[in-house]
Image (tube, rainbow, N blue to C red; front, top):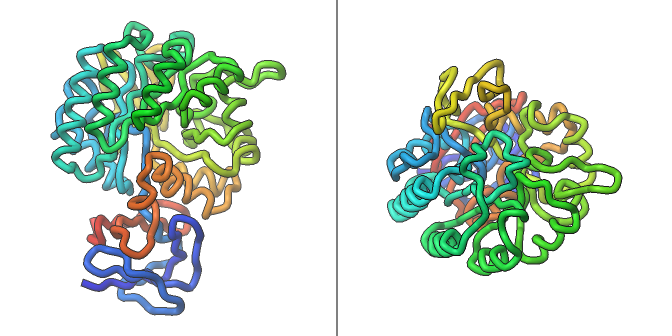
Length: 373
């Protein structure tokens, strides 16, 4: 089946093109052509690759936790496909050894079953700094042991991608080197580490930072910390652009310092894709009120965010060029996890996983392999 999409600007993963039509045959992009009228006529806005989200704690009323199995992971991924994602990395926040093992096993099963939209696993903890625990349960935070390292190295062999968020105080440089050499994406986060410590861990193989500015020491005149290291190097880092986690002024400063390499994450919880007002995670109640997710003590617990809304924030409030913001939700995260050849672009021979964003940057339509959802 041949489809021609026209009437909108087209983002191919790198540039935003006007007066072009996108040609899709049997669910695969064939190419683009100027001044061609399509059989799918869009009313302005942007046609873009479907999003890539590397930090998704849950969706559809389900959290990634110790109850995980391949079916629950498939349900989380399906929720985010409907929210415009080509793929996501389900993310486990700090939990027990037993829960972590079950989640790893479930994700391996999901990978073997080729669950649609499953890109791999993100373990956000438990090897963090309790001083920067954020919404994580301090009871689960602990240093990495030899058995933990062995389990991660084994998991990396069976998963399409594995990202592990760690704090320098809970892992050694040798452990980071071993993980990086095995292909694990080591992300620094939830840490009080100094700028110098961050540089040492980057040198050892850390290749990312988790939710820039959140759960890390603030930048100060003599102590730039991890945030300063991100802005002063080429280390990729995620951003939660929900208007709650990071102020507009700080987002503008970040983009001025690092016009390349930053990417958008939803940090979404099980609330994503639902109208739920509250849910329980590891015995702790999380409430959803006016776009904020909080624990009973007021601590922010993840984000009530979709990536189309993050895009709208970056373009309309922060003033980021549309092509730059679109790359932050598509091609940049895809390249970070080594999937830039398959995700994040609308180029010939790529699957036609696409989203249509109206002129207000609201997700209006999603296509999965060229099929409208």
